[in-house]
Length: 307
Image (cartoon, rainbow, N blue to C red; front, side):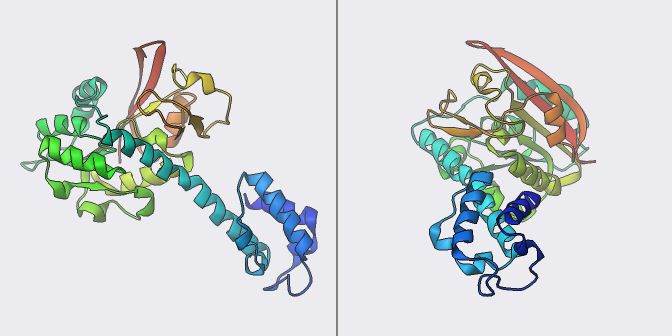
């Protein structure tokens, strides 16, 4: 990003690059016409919209200020999809949507691959975090396996229904946007032996997935295990979008089958891309499942450990 901005600045006015002062507008290095040209070039180059109210000399004082200014706008633009996706799901939860039964793949993978990796609790209940817990169907399954369960969802409606339907301890469940948090440890003041992220990570951008996975790793015990699944372009829902964006970029999906609202979705090209995203963990298993509906729906499953 920085190199692209510097190239634009060089093309508009090479003196901007050499300038080392604190206000090149007042010193006559950058004039108003060049600022307008710069705004247009930056908007085109990064797919952003710069509010006219922000086009003030303080944001164009020198090249460092401009780079910081553009970075902040990009961050705000990229994170805005979270509110949109969250609202879409909250709306359908209010209308009664939500899985009431645990995912069959999770049950199978738990007994065959996850359980053998879990630490010996030595008399204590292992702690499990269900990230994107929805109405708690998967969470309830893990409670039945003896776990002390916790859950996070961006939807307050989902959390309220999750607690009400299953009788969970309300202090163990929170509605929050994790991208606004520095740590998950402080949320429940504990660490987790197992973190499950089912049908949720692909609603984050590639950049934000790394932030979320970093929060997971920090919140896991030293012997902690992670399970997550992810959609691929080998799916009837997403296959038609293949090639419409670059690798690692989000697509805008008009209808996903469960939420009839536009959603931003990060769809995987292949298994290698899954491994790239989870490279901060030690991979134990990667599985691929095919669900035959109107066409093949291919998903990837990652099982790994913190250490």
